[in-house]
Amino acid sequence: RSNDRIQIEIQNAIYNYYGYFYERKRGEYEDGLRAGYIHRPQIIDRDIFIRLCNSCDYKPAEAKRFKHLFKEDNFAETLSNVDRFKEYFFAFKCYERLTQLHSDGKKNSMLELYGYALEHGIYAVVSACMRKYKGDESLKKVGSIVDSILTRWKRFESLVSRRPDNKLYMRSYIDEGSGGVKQFFNFRDYYKGQTLDSDVLRYFKR
Image 1 (tube, rainbow, N blue to C red):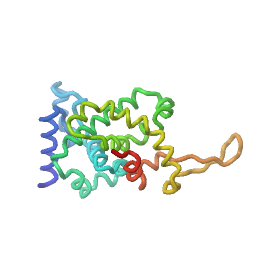
Image 2: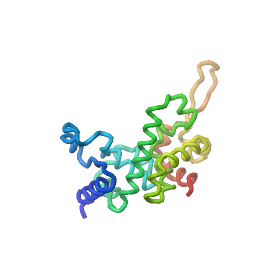
Image 3: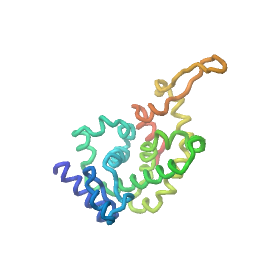
Image 4: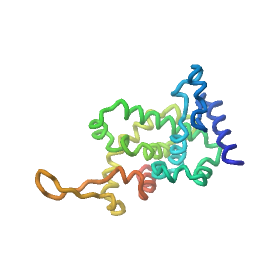
């Protein structure tokens, strides 16, 4: 089956089962929005959806690599199985929970509670949540699943920042106050880097 055909089938399955609208082509639901019979929260953005599909495949780093993500061969490879639509929708609900936490929270408090999970690592968190996915029953537990993963996230970041394989993400700078050299771990780059996928799989076991 062509990729377009598979996308249409996934789109239909998500609507028939959950009442949500996967936006296969940008703007295709604008008439429904203007008329008021479709509401914005019911629409799943195409760009976000394909990123979440990568998260379901335990490839959260690829979800952050925009240019690579939408190459035709990669897009076709990612969306290849209609039967996985329930996984994809669960990932979307996890994403919704995470973005809501991000928008509701203050930056400093979010960093203190969850490290860089919400600022740079949302797709990695979704991949970790997929380790707990067990079909329809998991959809009823999205909030608790996301929260349980987030409580472990600062520990995860602490461990990966010390792994020898991740030394390339360590950065140095001159402290203006003391004049000494200090270091920090560049999580922005790490969350789209080559070691993230295996780190998530290793740490968040079933």
